[in-house]
Length: 391
View 1 (cartoon, rainbow, N blue to C red):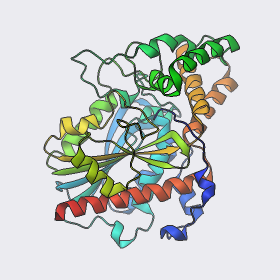
View 2 (view 1 turned 90 degrees about the vertical axis):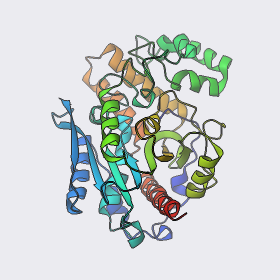
View 3 (view 1 turned 90 degrees about the horizontal axis):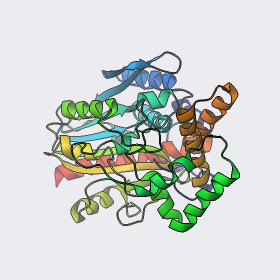
C-alpha cells in the first residue's frame, strides 16, 4: 500500500517464539520467505501439494523476469461451497507479495496447532497467491498495465475519481533525471508544506486516472488481475453466506508492525464485529485512525459486487517497513525507470533493489514479526467466522 509515516522498530521490542505458542524456529520461519517470485510460487505450490490440496492456476500470458510462468494460484483448504469462507490474499501490489506469500505458505506448511485446522463442516480457507504476478516477478508494485491494482476496482462506465493534487506534482515526482535535482525536490517540498503531510499523502497515494505512466494509476479499464480475481470469487465464493478476508500488504507504518485496517463497508454493525474479531486496535481510514488514507477502487470493492449474498468482514493487514520518505523515494525511482527507461544496468538494478527493500526488508526480525502477526490475524479470523456461525 502507499507509504505511511513512522519508524518505530517493533521487531526489536521483543517477539519471542515461545510467547506466541509457535512450534517453529527462526530458521524455519526464514525459509518461508523467498528471494524471487519463482521461488515463492514454488514454495506455495509445494506446501499445497504436501497437504494434499489441489491448485487452481490462472496463467498470465506473459513471462516472468527469468522467463518463468506467471500465474495467480488458488488453493481451497476445506469443503467446497462452505457457508463461511476466509480468503487470504497476497501480492495485490506485486513486490509486496514476498510477505503475503510467506504467510500463506506457512499457514499451509508449518505444523499448525489443532485449533488452526480447517475442520468445521461449514468453514473453508481460500488462498489467493500473487494476485499481481507480473509485479511480483518484475519487482514492481504495478501490474503489466502500469496500474495500481488497489485503485482499479472502480466503475469505469461512470466518471472516474479526480485527484487534482496529483496533477500538480506528476512531473515533479517523476522528473527527467534520476536522482532528482535539488531544484525539483525544493518545489516538491514547497507543495508538501502547502498541503501538509496528510494532504501530500493524499495527492500522491489516493489514486489517479489521468497519467498512465504515473504513480498509483487506476487504469482505464479492469486489468487482467482485476478480472481474474473476480472469476475466482464467482467460482469459490458465490454461495458463501459470510466472507472474511485478509489482504496482506507492506510498506505503510512503523517497522514490523502489522496494522489491522478495517476494510469493509463502514457501518456500526460491521465495525463492531470486526473489532470483536481483530481487537480494539483496529484502525479505519474513514475516521483517520489509520496510517492509510481512503483509496479509490480497492480490491475489497469486488466482494460486495461479486458476492452480494454474503456478509462481509474484511481486514487489510499492513506491515510497516521504513519511513515514508524512503518508501516514496523508492517508488518514485522505480516508476521513473518505467517512464523513461535506463541503459545503465547497475543503476537499473540499484533502483529495483531499493524498491524491493522498501517493501520487503529481508531481515530476520521483520520476518518473525510478520509471521507471528499474520498467523494471529488468521486465527482470529477463523475463530470469528466460527463464532458467527454459532450466533
